[in-house]
Length: 81
Image 1 (spheres, rainbow, N blue to C red):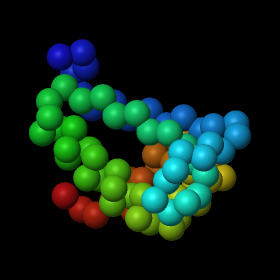
Image 2: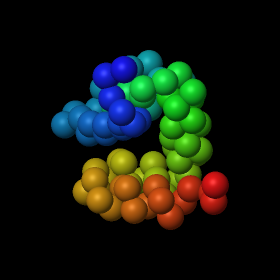
Image 3: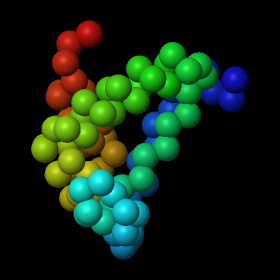
C-alpha cells in the first residue's frame, strides 16, 4: 500500500467551481482520501459523510478556517466510538 494510515486532504478552492453537485451549489472544497485498505477507506468515508451533514462543519469549510480548527471541530462533532 502507498500509505500506512488513512490520509485526508482538504483543498479549498480560490473560486468555487460548478461541479454539477446534487444540491446545485458550487463546490468550494475538494476532499482527497487515500487509505491503505478498502475497509479503512470506507470507515473514513463514513466519518466524513457524518461530518458533512453537520452544519457547523460545513460552515467551517465554507469559511476556510485553519486546518487545526477544522480538525478540532471534527473531533468535537464525531460521535464516540
